[in-house]
Amino acid sequence: MGTLDDCTIEDVSKKPQLEIADIFKEYRHLLGPLPLSHHKVIQDIINCRTSVLGGHVLQCDNCGHVENSYNSCRNRHCPKCQYLKQLKWIMAREEEILPCNYFHVVFTVPCVLNQLILQNKVLIYNLLFKAAAETLKEVAANPNNLGAEIGFFGILHTWGQNLMDHPHIHFIVTGGGLNKEQNEWISCREDYLLPVKILSQVFKGKFLDYLEQAFDNNQLEFWGELEKYKNRNKFKSLLIKTTKTDWVVYTKKPFGGPEQVIKYLGKYTHRIAISNYRLVKIENNKVFFKYKDYSDNNKIKTMSLDILEFMRRFLLHVLPKKFVRIRHFGFLGNRSKKEKLKICKIILNAKENRVCEGIENSKNILQKIADLNITICPTCKKGTLNKTSIIEGLLKTG
Image (tube, rainbow, N blue to C red; front, side):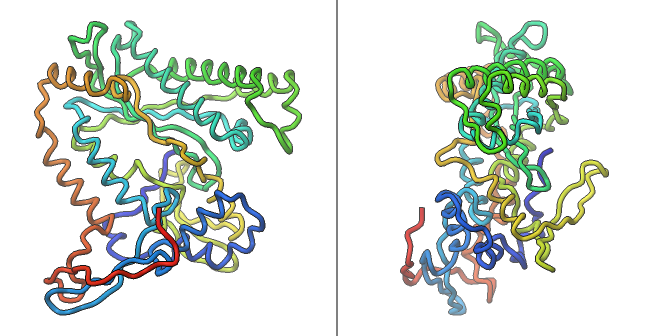
């Protein structure tokens, strides 16, 4: 579970030798007819930072070096367009980070449901968020556990290391929360948030219950091999089958403090199924890419897929239009966030500049990762690149 880091600081100082765009540009004809949404993703990735989208001419004010800077496609599935979005999102979270421990909690569903989820992405992704968030809130609010209202946000990932469908949600959770009267902060143990077995059981019950309700309300679609599950007894047997496998919920080691949370978010929140920096080569009609082998001490290895299969798996993770994959809950929920965060800061005696150094470090790292330091001339390393003219593109970005 989880994903290999998109890239290292050393990696981003140089352009990848192979990009997702190269693969689709050369081999997309193999895919045949595609949904309009998939076609748009492919076209955006191919056009990103090319003359098709236009841009502007830059010239160094010291040595006169001239270069073209092309616009980004801004598609959230594009590997070139995520770093700047990360930076903007992280900066918006700065004032929400509290001086407390934070935990990383992951909720997954059995793979036997993967096909059903692919045929009902919007509905079931929403149910996944709903069931997992309710589970965290209810278990945390129980006096036998923490007895507090926690704050957390979740990030939907739909892939595994091999690019197959593996829907799961990563939550970043405060290591404590507000009591019922909202006048006291209740902290969890330094290395323990909530009982994962109880989280797993509650989550399983909620998710399956919501799925059954969706079936009864005729909200689920079944086609192809899943048509048999239109029958209620067959569908019920599918749900029963899921109860015989483990519903994995686990908590990772807590962060060391607010600074670590900021740095972690900076490389995690806006990932896509695979980045350009994981690609190795194309050889014998296969795409070779790096992956992390969790069954072998998390060693980084290389695997290969047929080009058509690689593209097919990449497209499995195209999200429905306007689907929100990062959501906030508890006292970080949008309705009450401003008021409750203010209460938390007062109780915790949080200083407004409490994580300034960590944030600034993260900004520097993200600046390098995002290629935001493009004002320095690459030729003389002294001058500043300034816009001198506009390059008209064939298509508009956005």
